Image 1 (cartoon, rainbow, N blue to C red):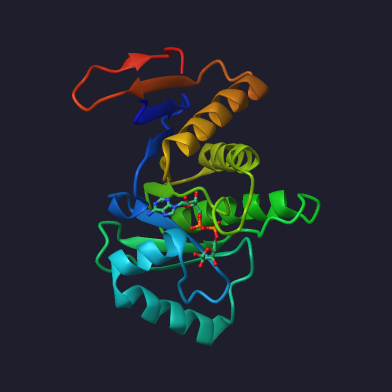
Image 2 (cartoon, rainbow, N blue to C red):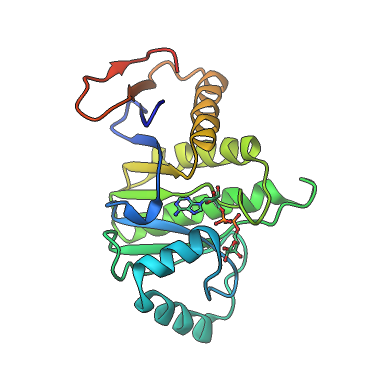
Length: 211
Ligand code: APR
């Protein structure tokens, strides 16, 4: 099983793909797939609030009182509370309907605005879940293509953020994201990209092996 794949983009920026629980990440920020009320929910949202504690919800309340509900595609930050990450970036992905209601643009905005917020906060590393692929029903392959493409674009002109980790909840979703990255490399003819697979901790990684 492939537990961890690193993609070096050739300009110092890196994207990691791994299976796991995003609440355990030690990145500067983790991104929450929230809903517009910012009042918590199930899935990754519930897990983040449970692990991070009440300080996160308190800040979310203040944000909603001040600015109202968070529109899909936008992003705001709170403390990470008890998490290892200092910040949680809350964003709202699109609810999948039929793919003709602007879903891909909203999903790209969610990733883009989260990346730009992290950059404004001068953070170096950000972890993302597969936004919208759970309760919101976005098909995994299509969501992964948008996620990878948008994050690569943002990394290319980020001032501070140079590491993104996609933390996927299942091995299947991990495979989908790795495949999306390979497809994106082909699409861009990005010969400077290099994939490094690390199957187990402590084992010397092999570069550009068949993924
Ligand atoms: N770590 C990483 N990924 C997780 C975790 C976790 N701890 N828990 C769930 N996931 C994965 C799911 O398997 C899915 O692939 O996160 C992805 C997104 O799923 P959801 O959490 O359901 O998010 P989304 O589809 O964007 O729906 C958002 O769900 O919980 C509510 O309040 C949230 O209403 C909002 C809606």
